[in-house]
Image 1 (cartoon, rainbow, N blue to C red):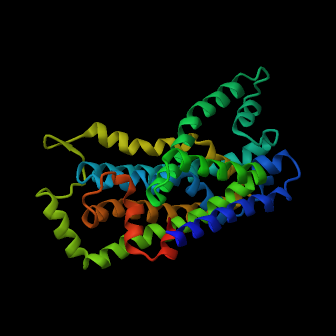
Image 2: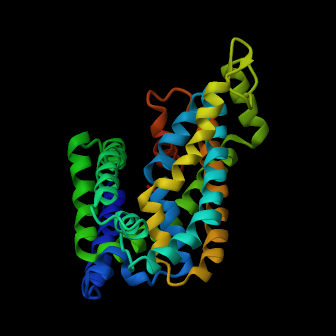
Image 3: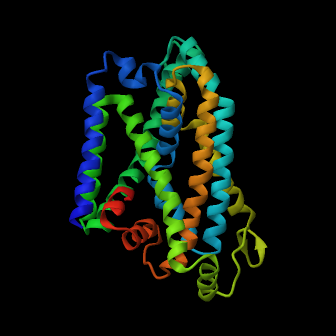
Length: 327
């Protein structure tokens, strides 16, 4: 436990150090809010996807898949919806938004862009879009802080509220110090770590259980039903649940923390490379997260809280140094 704590401290210290690094490179409001529009393709892609998926990819999606059959089919179709939404957002919106935010008075925020683009001299569109962003992001951001609280509680037995506050303070510190550049670079590091962790956990778990056949046998022992691709109610496909799962992908076209990455890339021509990087990352991590939930059910079938399956498997399978890094 001490080793994991040391790894955590070093990692969080690195996040703060990145904030200090970019503090000295921030000269004006554009640098602070939009990184001076100087992001490269890799940072744009990794930070956009890590910021998008964040704690949900490691907690929410595996937790949904952990609830076998109904939950697994829902998780699969949610992943499909997210894949489609991600691709279309990069394909349709990214390059246009990068171009027109600069053309429209060099807007550095989305409310600024809407006001300039539609020549709203009364500031009505700007105000409404800002209000909606605050309302919905208050809920969204709180869910990310909740993920941090659950992490500290699960790993260290720390009080949930205390863990949430620690996570929030660290995030606020590097954001306040380094602005948008610090956020993007820390998200990129997290994105790379998430990519490795999500691949490693299910592979090691399958190896530890003796292969895929052994995993199938364990799952079959839990219930006589077979894993279904479609969510069903009384033997018929639940079209409402199917549609709502796919509908997750619609959110991409209006999420400011993703769209602002498009605005900040150095050149519109770099979008295509970023799109390729982002799609490879998303395809692999989404399916790996679903796999963690399903394989985790076979590996640890009696967890009280399925959303902790990723953390519980890491604690059980890896030595403290590796576990600390992945956690």
